[in-house]
Length: 391
Image (cartoon, rainbow, N blue to C red):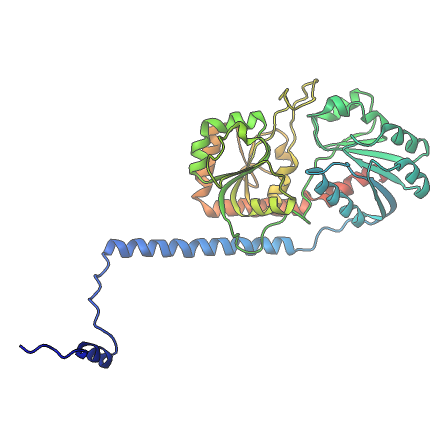
């Protein structure tokens, strides 16, 4: 047999357009089934995410409740602290501008009494009050100008705040159990006013989250949180937990769970809201009222009321599972707008349920967001504060 001339094979290939390829093996039926299941799951996930984002967008696009614009001048004294207080200060004075015809903002390092004497406001409202000299407050009151203090950290620092409250006309506290405590200390006008969500910061993402999470926890590693998480840490990590906050070296060895634990960083409110909104579930575990290492609560006043994070998570558009406190049901109905837990086993069980029941998870998210926008924004709270003072 004569050998083929050099290049003949190449000529044949060119004429045919391409070389004949070996016939690919047909995929096994079970492989087709797995691919189809994956495709269907991806389509369903995309539909669920888009449907949820769309419905949340409808809720957040509704006209906000209308509150009266009072013809008053409010002098707002900021906390004078950085994170996490600075965003709260921003939210309060921006909201006040919607409720009062004139708002002046000062910080406690200024001579606020002199400023009050010059501008003669109808109300001087201070947040936290730790950095505002009490003699300045007394001088303002001596001018006949009303003063109010909104306390941010009750009951954890009542050893300090109990020395502040007698210098103000009105006291507002975010802890229900502190109302009687301050009244028993001689304050006549003490009112329960929990914090809320400032929707200028805390709101759902409109688009699909870039870095989606199953589970998130944002907060400092107080010892009660460390002790609670330690026995179930592996189970939580297996379910996709991410943690952001300070002091987590109390629980994690350096380098443990790379990319899943971000330590020693204050996240701004927008970044925090993005973390919440990109998470299917956000865990909220309150700090302990009897932690002697960080608290100044010698009276051991038990905390009953929800922390500000309760409202911020709900406003960001994610399912919240929070440790049970007796006052939470005043704001969100458990099992309808929020989920609660009283043990590690209950927390894990509810996480597993909602990670596998998207429709149920979604409906709680939407109901929580709806109620937050209707009842639990800074506008609602500050309107209530001004109503108490001015009628």
